[in-house]
Image (cartoon, rainbow, N blue to C red):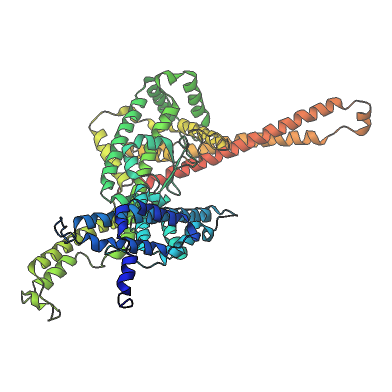
Length: 605
């Protein structure tokens, strides 16, 4: 009899249904098990859950109480949620997820920082605990099962997705953490499939569109490599921001090609405002009188390659502008230079936007069919062919025929695909030359009004170029300073772009070429440089004649030594002056090459 009733006796002796009346002890049991670490026996977790499940039959003996939609008594469901959420998830799964996340972050950041004595993730507590928890089978409690490994994977997927949406630039970091989790812990964390936010995106096109005036004032344009670089970093920033074709293409990938028209419209409005400021500047009575005087002088002279517009006249006007202190009215050559530079930077950004649109379209084009707009026709032919029946298409006879709604959806999708293909083709092959378009629009506006004060603009360009060369040399010298300001930059092709733009609007390119200003500037700098080289040679010959040893013993060579010191100082100053004129000649060459290269942007197709 004892043997026949041993199962019932053991069941009664091991019945732990009383734990239902001591629910507050269950979280403490599990927390103590997790805190024990390697010293604890993790198999006890399933034993604890099995002991708690003994209360199930007792709770189900109450059919008179309320039940859930699943047919489970409500108090059984509440007890299960208490055990799973308040005990198992809060005391075991939650701390484990946080420890695993910390271990992954340490592993990724120590790798990226190249720390010599980096932390070994294998020696971390979470790494050792994971081997026990992730190898455990599903935990059964009150008819429910909990997979700890799957819960950790879902936690990591959720945290990676949420933090990536906050900052797309950290997407690469969480991708590395996902790979480390698979390699070291065996966790299969799925990809969040969010768009990759990289450093290539840089400044957002939407932000530039909203603040075009700040952008063209704080950034410098490089026409050769086609990028913008910030003149001075913002407070707290460690690096200068750069806007290139790749950055704008990434921004178009995020926002779509629809923002191109809006951005072009904003650029045109800013150009119109700046051109109005340019026109008001030339309306000044003193500047108009000077330009008229210079035009009369040019008409009396027969300028050619050998007899070009003299550099002395341009220098005289620049000096006179400073002496008259027109800065009180805001009429200085520096102001006009900044206006033309901002106009050129705006046009450079439009050119950059056009190139980025073509790059984006070229990357998208390989995914489209080579045929032109045949998707809709193909769908229509297959659905409404000669037999005018859906069954005419090749299909499996065992499968049901497609419904009319399915064919309508396919046809609608084909139309959308055709429209998208037209947009991409137009952006890739028929990109409008916006720079020339701006020229034609402003010319139409000027044709309906009196703008005679702009007819002599080309005469002031020599003085402007002298001002720009001096500013450019000073800015490049300031690049070596530790604390740089907005006056320090190494490229400023926006000025050349603005000059070419105004010349194209006013049709003064030929008038400016007749001045032969480049030849005059080249001859003037070469003349000064040759005179300085001659003085340098003379000073070098003086230093070679040193006093004899016999005369120096009697103190007769002291005056000669003082003369040598003066000659050495003179040689240093002459070398510095020669270098300055060489740099000036190189800046002139660079300026006029940029102006000539930008004229092609404003030619009408």
